[in-house]
Structures are given as structure tokens and as C-alpha cells.
Image 1 (tube, each protein chain N blue to C red):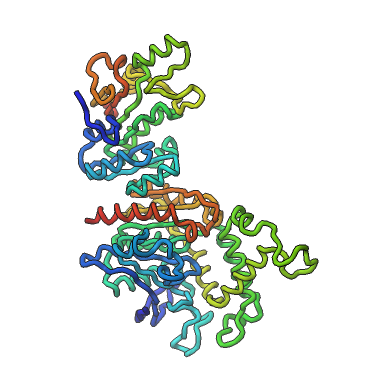
Image 2 (image 1 turned 90 degrees about the horizontal axis):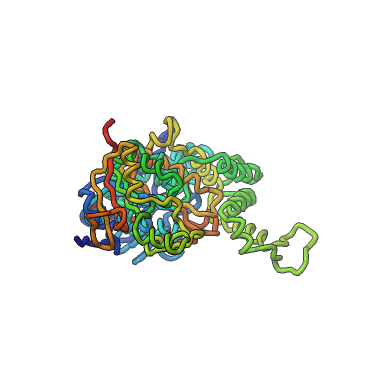
Length: 357
Length: 202
């Protein structure tokens, strides 16, 4: 489904008009409108969270943690994306051509402001929960801070209250790989050859940061790809090279390089405590129940970043549950290692909906 | 007098009777959140918990308790003053590194503290030590010295002495032997002591 919003004011000062927002939903909104849950996708995700091939299929569905028999589940594509919501690849009404680099720089705050408009349209005054991992967790935090009265609980998985120098650094490597591709053409590549090599390299770097040393060792080791001995050339020797190249080339087919630039920039700008004395001050008015989860082997969004959020909440005696889950899958754990997550989320949601009654 | 049991624990039942409905409660070393969930469901408390073991934290959150994974001896410092009506420490005092610091922190972040601990002065403990000449092992203290989580042993007398030195007000004392309360000679006869305390006026 797609809803058109006449205009949206952005943090950079620009106004975007009109704005399409693509979303999917599962389950039914109850008569009290008290069972709505907003699922927030990570950097390269889309609105297809549940159902066949959904990126969080294991977590959302009948009888699952986000139980579609009990809850009304909504997931939308983020602002700046390339899967139905307005982004740099969308048509600029002023020129009739794709925005490309004319697209204004957006923030996580802008993404959430657009989602709030979607909530208005759907008749959801207050979410039972907003939930997501990685950039989805950052949006969940932003929701709780920007609209405390509209969020009963926030589930923040493998996320942070602000991007670190290391996180910005990896994003910048990805952006530079794209911009350095001669096919990028200053962003005006629509309708011609895509900056496929640059985008693929960006994705390769991304995939390395999503795994862990242990998970790569287990998955690839030093195994060779389709050969018994080194090729003594620069074709693919190792299994891990083959995997990264495959994931890189696959990504090019489903993701827009300019969206990569804009969304990673939004993540890098994210800092909940910007303009405040401390992160704790941000949560002074928090009325939301928080569930914060991190993973032992996640070195991209390390546990200390989750603990920072938890500590800030506890300074005001905020309602927060926190657990570091054991997993060897690195940052990817929130997508693939779902058994314990599901157990925790089920209980957390049940208690939250009970407390609203 | 026989007391009820909550999850097979009579000290839980005693704590459940002390805490009034709707109170703000922090449970230190809350395990899998049994007491906390009981208080939430039966007393509608606004409850929080701290627990070190990730497995127990996971189970506690899955039960619906707002539990935070961490070491409460450090974590206590982060809470504001008088944030809770009750701070509970149930049979864990003897496992803490700095019991006095913990107790003072509990009385800073809570208006009242509830402390339950196994009494090292119980006659069986005394006998076990006297007769065997070894570190006492009893039903109450079942561990070998080298694998015991207990690092600070205390008796009912010890606690009362400390309370008077620190000018704490002991608002309630309940002594338990199994599921029965003990009225006389608590330092000899009580297995578990439960104290409700607050800071005295200076």
C-alpha cells in the first residue's frame, strides 16, 4: 500500500512535497485501537517485514513474538529509501526527473515524522510498541523521544543513541566507493548504467561489519572456491571472496546507490543527545517502557552503546529492561538469531498490553 | 505461626505482605523475577529488577518484569535519590563484596529497604562448626568453602549491631524457621531474618 502526504517539513529546513510512504500491515486493529505495533526496518530493509521472504519473518506472524493474531502490525519503507517511499530515485515534481542529488539531506527524525503521519492516516493514536534493530532501533528511540505520548513501549535491538566515529567511518567508506564509481555521474545515473561496482563494494564492506570473526571463520574459514589450489591471480580464490562478491552484485539489483548515500548520512547524523547536556536529560520525560537488547558478538553496535541508553534511562528511574544476548552472528544476530529475542519480546509485549488495560 | 509461601519461599511471602499496593519497588539480584512478577501481579507495584546472570535476566524479562542485566553493586549508583518506596535484597547480602556500601546505597535510592539473609548464628551452623572443626555446611549454607557464593557471613546480632551503629531504624523484624516464624532467641533459632529498615533521623 502507498499513502501520499501533501508535504513534509524536514530538519534541514527544506520541505518535501508531496511524499509517498509505502507500507504493509498484518493483523487487525482492535476497536480500542490499542494493539498497533510499528516495525522499523534497518538500513537496507523495506516494508516487507513479515510473510514469505519477509526480513523479520521469524519474528512476525500468527503465534510468533509479534503475533498477528493479537496485534496489528505495520511496517513502512523509510524516507529516502528506494522501495516505494519517496527517495532520491523518485520523480522531482519541479523538474519531472529523478531528484538524484537535488533530494534534501534527511535525518532519522524526518523518517519518524513521516511515520507519524502514516500513523495519523491509519487512525493509530498510540502504538503499543515501536520496534526495530540497528537503524530500526534508532528510529524506535527517536519515536519515544519525539512522541512520548504516542509510544507505550519501544523495543530497541542492536542499536545506539548516537553513531560513533567507527560507525560513521564504515558508512563513509561505502559512500566513497559509490561516489568514486565513474558510472555514478554526480548522482545522475538514472536511465543509464548504474554505479554497480561502487555500490557492490559498499555492500561488501557492510557485510563484513554485520558478521563476526567467529561467524566468518565458521561459515568460510580459509576454504577455496571451486579450486584445490591458489590461482596465483586475482580471480576469486577464497569462499569468503565469492560470498562478498555475490552479496555485492545481488544488492545492486534491489538498492539505489543514492539511497545508500542519503540513508547512511541520516544514520551518521543521528545523536539523540544533540543540543542537550546529557543523554539522561533526553529521557527526563520518558513515559515509555523500554526493552533494550544487544548481542555479545556485535562489534558494529557494541553492547556499551546499549548500556549507555539503559544507564541514561535509569538516571530518571525509567522503565527499562535490558539483556545482552549470547550469539556468534555479530550484528546480523537480530535478523538471524531470533529464538531468545522472540521469547523476550513475547513476554515484554504481553506485559505492556496488560498494563494498558 | 505459619506463613504462606511464594514460589516455595517464605521470605518472599513476608516481603509480599510488607509491600503495599502500587509501591515503587527495586529488587536487587532478582533472579528470574519470581518475586517481582508476583508483586506486579498481586500488588500492582511499579517494579524494577537487577540481575547479573544473562540467562536469568532473559527469563525474567520474558515473564514481563523490567529487569536490567548488570552488577547491582555498581548499578545502584545510577539511580536518583529516593527513587523507590522499597529496595529489596533477598538472600544476597552475604554474597556482596561491600555489604555496608550496598545497604547505604539501598537506603539512598529507596525510602525503605527490605533485607532478608540466612542467619549464620543459627544453632545448626554453630554445632556444625564446633563438632566438625571445619567450615560449617548445613541445609542453610550447603556449599563447600571453595565453591560458596557467600563471602560475608553475618548473624542476626551482627545486623542489629550494625543497624544501631549506622543509626538505621529497624521498622520490622521477622524471623523464620522453615515456614514458621520464630519469636524467641532469634539469633540461635532463626534460619532466615527479614528486616524492614529506613534511615534514622540524625
